[in-house]
Image 1 (cartoon, helix red, strand yellow):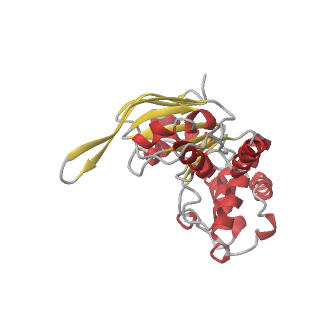
Image 2 (cartoon, helix red, strand yellow):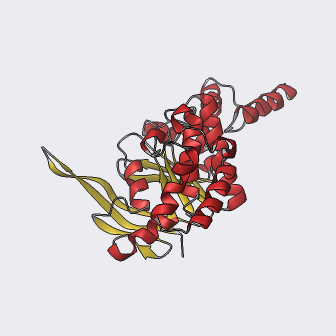
Image 3 (cartoon, one colour):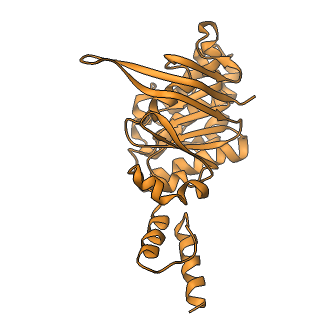
Length: 281
């Protein structure tokens, strides 16, 4: 059984002028425990809706979302769903609720009724996991954007969720903050086996995932490993979707008659193809 499974999921929003507008059109998707999945697509394609469906913040209009076998439509089990899937939003300021870092991280476990001694243990472990333990007595509003986002992630970890869904967590950060958050995400997945679903519009972040799911107009367009997905440059371009810069460079060179013999995902891979090409000249 998959950890998260979407079965024929449709979702509609109420609009003032047009009544109901369907934004998801029969999504079928399985995410296994321990996976690191990047979810890509244009604004408005349904990515953020999927994120909120995964932890029961939203409920399907049709179909089902199963989390560890629990149907999110079961009102009696919604707290159980949120204990398993934590959601980190784009703006960390919207998730930080206390005046001290450690109090903020403790907020979730307190609401779950966790005993005080266990809360203390969870808070310390969560802050150490995101390398923010030394900031435990600081005021969150004095932290950098990347540090705030790591505190928000620690708050989810302290609830001992087995999956973290991150909805464009680096969109408001500078390059350093983005790198900090990505390093944290990869560490949690690699060392703690936490399932990661990362919604992003940065292709250099997507290539770090083990699997890439591409959405377009409320449906799944592509699903596979980063190399498999981004090798299909023409198909992605037909849907006005980006590819990593290194992949784009080699694609354009090939169109100009210079075939490096591959579709690199990173600058390092691109340089290696250039070196190999020069050696054969």
